[in-house]
Length: 42
Image (cartoon, rainbow, N blue to C red; front, side, top):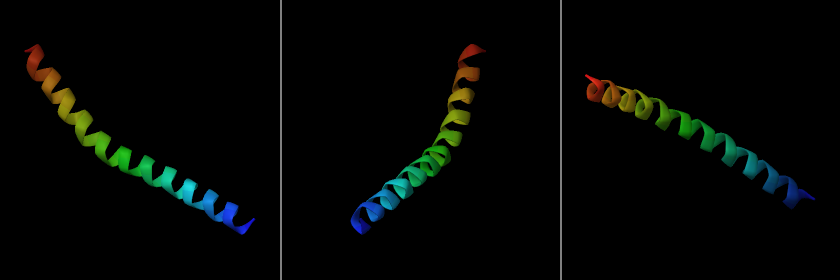
């Protein structure tokens, strides 16, 4: 049981870390992409 609980905790921590990292990476990439798109439109 303890091994299963530890595995669950590790999975949850990995998911949370993945979401945080994805958000940290996504916001600059999104602003950069919107800048590129705006530059191409003009």
